[in-house]
Image (cartoon, rainbow over all chains, first blue to last red):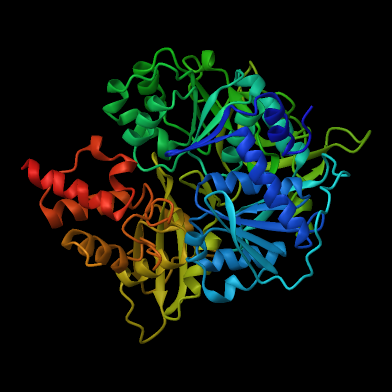
Amino acid sequence: MQYLVHHFLDQACREFPRKTALIHGRERLRYLDVQKAADGLARRLLELGLKKGDRVGIYLEKSVEEVISVFAVSKAGGVFVILNSALKPDQVAYIMGQSGMRCLVTGPLTYGHLPPALRRKPEFVLALEGGKIRTVIGSRAKRTKDIPFPKDLTGNDLASIIYTSGSTGFPKGVMLTHHNVCLAAHSGAKHLRNESGDVLMGVLPLSFDYGLFQLTSAFKMTGTLVLKKFISAEDLLETARREKVDGIAGIPTILIPLAESRALNKIALRHLRYITNSGGKLPVKYFRKLRKALPRVKIFSMYGFTEAFRAAYLEPEELDRRPESIGKAVPNARIYVLDANGKECGPGQTGELVQAGPLVSRGYWKNPEATAAKIKQNPLHNDYDDPVCYSGDFVKKDKDGFLYFIGRKDQMLKCSGYRVSPDEIEAILHRHPQIRSAAASGIPDERLGHRIRVAAVLKSGASLKPEDLLAYCRRAMPSYMVPSEIRILDKLPLTAHGKINRALLAAGKVS
Amino acid sequence: MSESPVIFKVKKFFKKDPEFRFPATVRENTSLVQAGVFDSFSVIKLVTFLEKEFKIRIKPEDLLEENFSTLKQIEKLVLRKQKKK
């Protein structure tokens, strides 16, 4: 069984070396080609002195090079940290520093987005173009040739750190082991009933747990991953038709335009077998629209959180009966609904979703306090070490054991599938020289999950206009975090305890 | 090489708005999606600009990546739409 991330590539390449592994626009790479490029890059990383467990940033747009880098870092024994190309320099700088990134793999175009100070931050930088290493910058290390690939890696070694918004104003890095990533792919193949040679749509970013899961799932089935950046529903559907896609994994931001598109009835998707939704709730009416337009296609409602990689899914057959449900635990996961005392809730009783099993991550990189608050010993027994992960999501179970999402325990928001903390937005706003204080709140939005509303108080004498602040946000924040509404106020509304009253702001009851 | 008026205007539009990231390395045939110039959030803004600036109508069916993949392709789309009127 594959227990290291790159085993999926190795195995597929052994079985079907000439099968198409990746499609990106006009580019087509066979498993053989991906393997050769990944081996070459892994060897180069080792020659430059990469050691087991070193963090390697991957900062590329969606591309075959990004996929090659993931497998290369895994082969070389490194830990890949995929930087979403939507991130702005400040976030990239933070992640570089917090992860102790030793090496950065990038491309000429993404590299161009980085300010010069950041380009010199990692010890060495490799730029890829056309699947090959173009340039190596910054390494004065002596090159040692022919270093063998590490042979002592185990499934418990870290494969990746995925950064997700944190409540302290800074992102937190979720540590995923090779086991976490590999077992999720095995689990997914089972419950999504993937078939050998499946063509999957890779429209979600690899920096997103569910996006990475598409890659490992496709390679596990010696299938093909179609890399596609989401531009429009029409473009996605046309690509699905042209490339004979079997499965599309989406989030509401993608699936709502898809369900609403006139092209859905016009473009014949003969091969499409399933669509999955994750990263936020898809309102029932859109499930219905998709079911109506694509009656043969199975639609899965998925639920997961990065700290436990994948968690629950709803069988398509149940969708009509329990459209609001997030289903039951995926294979190889166990889900409890626990009350504040750590006791299991009965049917209909609201509690926190807590996950046990080997998909549970190792917690947060270099953050033992946050890890201890998230991952604890199973409160239901003390017989052996059984770490469980507290999701922070309130849910309830019905009498048949199906789960329903109720809300968040904290103030965390979901924007276009990304977890966003109001604290992180506020921290960025506070860096603006004219702002005295600011508050961000989320307004529920079908398509985006949440829209961001910002209220700011200016320093005396400042004359900042909302549109200037918006321009600042666009420069400083990834697009999914940019507020849709900005108000300049004289003072922020406070709660009785003197904290900022975000609920009042979200309700729009301030002027 | 001199730029066509369409490319000149589109480039100016990209450079002016902070929502688009326009690296200096972008040439006429550089993939704009690969360069991260726009995504599904900002493509609508680009379409609105093109419709207003060049007095054309861009239909949902035209929202294919190939039509917006490079500056050159955007120019082709604009010229094709202008001819149709």
